[in-house]
Image (tube, helix red, strand yellow):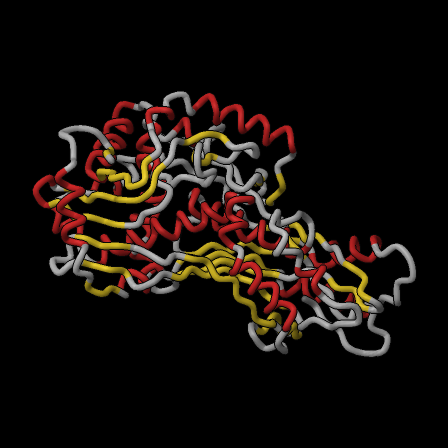
Length: 452
């Protein structure tokens, strides 16, 4: 949120919002790439890398294409405790890539998994088994791929492959995205606001002037390739968070109004408050032999800090505290699961966090070596090519505001960040896991990607 002091200041508090979007690519996952399951969060990227919101007709068209591509999805049934073979999925993806055929839906959607709650190593079958609740994939009202019963998005094998390939590179800085105004844009905005006088009537000309002054903002993705679907989920979640905070669209959750609407009349917000989402987990449980692992307590937390605008750019965390921003973050954290039911991209974000944590667990604990499972085909981009997506590079500024007494309040900035290696390293022993692993592997059929 942008702050200018002085008696001639038009805005005691002001800032700019952003729009974000994405598109698709193609590979052995062809039916799930360009023209298929690639778009995330109802947004798209144009040929110049500028993000735009999908219009209603484009969403309807995308939903129709997805329904057609899901012709074999009913082979994936709902299950309370699905077990999915990583070895069988690896073989299926490798064979599909070699034959130039589409990957079956039960592989694309990881056997219907909605969440990974356990990982079992099976040295006898040279396998790693992913465990969790599962559902049948269907196309929801807004075009998102969700479970028929739960209405929550399913995990996607494509995102898991991206996590496996990128996890070593994420050791240092984690996985993250952010959307930030440029230094030149902030300088132009400051100069523009310095020339303004108090607005007595329609503020729209002011907002349009602010948008033009601040110009395009920069999208930064780290820890995963910017042209991956995984990256699109990060950016789309950040985009939706900004839209909700700014009041451009309702959250769908009564307890989560927009940030702007929470600023009291006559109140003053901080200088450039920043909202971002971080993941949290309880410690991962393991058996004595480190062949069984249980993930629990996953959650997303909304955090805020007040940035300060200066001639040298943005100083992170240098502004004064914003109690209203903290209150809005607390509401988003408390009602994140409710929000994820209304806005599926927030559930997709948690899915990607799950997959990155499992990738870090496999890599860090060398579970593939312990299982005798060769993951090389998945790690080889030439053997198993993934869809490529247009890279989001910039977003246009969109300004809006609410008049609170004599104060005009406009939007904030944000991001997404988490460190999967931190979660994978935080493990503790659990006595019951060995028996659960034994029972799960004993029920395994001779063939097939998944079982209950």
